[in-house]
Length: 121
Image (tube, rainbow, N blue to C red):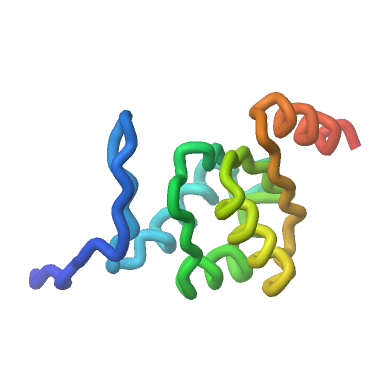
């Protein structure tokens, strides 16, 4: 089998590892994992973006968020701590009108409180 020529689109080193956006369709693979984790029943979703220094949302990420996020998430809570992360996220929300409600918080406790309030409804 001939392997595809894979290249790293963007890489960020963190104290616990490296996060890489690869050219081999990793988002599709993540979608399968997320659906398996949730047994194909959308659930509340939390993401900690406080370590993200230079957020970028390319067209592949935009498509993933608008076309597939609702397949595994009902609501999306995100922690962030930079103005640029807020700007990128708010721009995405404004332009693409995702099918799940997205809220950003400075502290993890805020995300927990919001997600618990959604879960009670």
